[in-house]
Length: 320
Image (cartoon, rainbow, N blue to C red; front, side, top):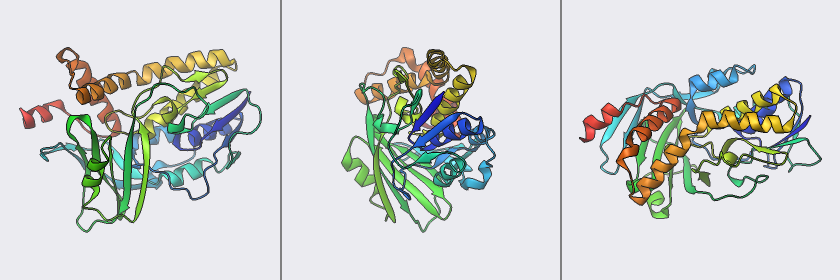
């Protein structure tokens, strides 16, 4: 089976690496110019990343830039709740992706040639999969220096309209905001002087109901593996790549690969639909009490997988 991987971000480069190491006839394509700065918070759970990279020769600890001791959450009241870290770090994502590709065959072009399987890892553009009803949020992100030391922080805007974050990255900081409101983004970032500014859209709607079409199968943000409540997508996207790799190693029949992959994706990411429903319900002021337990369980699991020791009891003590 000849396999093409279109898009070589975190999920695409990881999948191509796994396929290459396992002897598959795989080739990668990515038209981004050399040195292109990829907008991203560069934060992930080090335990999950270590597990994912255990299938490679790479040591994740060598890419870590800053480790969180605590993660601070706040809302419109600015009241802070501190949670212990369960492994949240920032890391050099660009270097990791470059190292994953070192022994792979790839080119800086769009896909050329004919392949038995085309993997769409093109992120928010979803270039090779059918267009579907979508929901995205715009983000603006700064790389900046800050005189006073800052910890890992999240601040949520009112009515589910977005969030602001600060992540230490070595001697710099990654500061960003995502929202439907340009004014809210500008106001939250106004205290900071950027050394680099980038912007992008992130997909907050899970699209696991549309992950393949013909000989095309999607991974990563192309199928909505971004947390609707934190915007974190690195570990989930790499997990989706590993699930597709697993399906490919189990069968060389395309229909069987698609069926097995769909089953694995559903099992791993079904909670994203619950979290997306929570987000949209907050935005539309239609929260239903009968869904509270499902929302709490999905949120707790998601935040813990991101590397945050989230406890609902802490939230209740602070706000009730």
